[in-house]
Length: 554
Image (tube, rainbow, N blue to C red; front, side, top):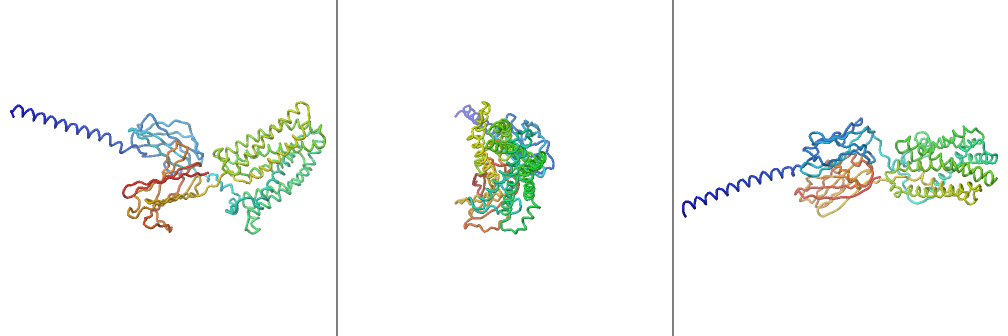
């Protein structure tokens, strides 16, 4: 081979080697820049307020900071209240050179608040999550347990035995219906006493009815209170009646209702304004002793219930008075019907408005009407009230033509009144919220056994327990994560529950498996709804085992 040919080959090899070295260097640099961010996506570095923070006063803002710059095109930061509603429509602002977000907040009341965020890191990786902080010392959210009268007097479990209609439950419902009918009729007749220019036939019918209903109301109240106290003190000595009547809220209300009932027979002999005072006090005692007093704000819910009862009394007393006058003197009944039809319209507007507002305050959503007997009876009551509206329209049309109402329509109206009173007497003894029960999820498998417990499994503070059994050859897990996510709320991030290992003393071992136990306590279920719990277990060989279960809290 000639010297020039050899020189050419050596130059080509040297050039190829240099190009290869440069290519390797460029590839390494590109891979270095490309791979490093992928292994270190943006993560939450700091949050103000932070997870599990308990603040005395409302914070002025929520601020989250990440370890790297965020994409400026898409980001979201929200704060939800105990009903999972956003507390503000304000848009979050970017801070710290694009590494963080800040959301200005209105003044927050006492409660548990969920911070949920969704961002995209600079490398295009989506990052989301959620956590909870608390303002003040909020009371436990209203659940089915708070509406149980047995729990209110310290006798939990007394009313939970058995199911179906027993003699005792029938008597309780019957006494409730009788008491409610007497209250509405007596208070309604007292309100109609304001019609000072009533014709003699109307006035005479009203006074006779008031004298009778006053005595009836007393008898009904006595039976009602005695039967309910007996149910509340099942298995307790009679002396417990005194404690309930003097030391519990529900007992004091029973005592007030009894005192007012004792004054009811005197209504026919006292003045108009004294009658109105009695009616207002009796209706207020009923409003305060009902479900409304268990919800917040109590002045709003009890106020709605009071107006609702007043509207029912105005309509119920008027229907009763119209029927009594009709049986005695048709012409006077026609004149009274003209006046009554106008006030019946006002009372129905009040009933519908306050009824809808109360239901919206009691229930997280209208679908809850299908979960309980209370909701089904309320639907029945609503259907009956629509029939009452139809009857009222027929009466009104005949009155406008100068004709008297048909007797069949009047009787139907009274019958509907009785049916509505029956529905109300039953549903006021029912629980508007479904009962929460502790979650106990257990799954067996060849690669892992798992138990998840959540107690009491209700909105607010809960105890979480996770137990994991792995094959003995694998030993205990390297990592166990519990994540909670509300279903149907895609905008809300996942809440991570900070589990801590503990020594479990329960005798629940499985042959060939090693057990590890973890627990946590806190407000990681901040609002009602359907939730999904996800447990992620990483074993000693870095294999990940994932189990999921869905549940609902009310």
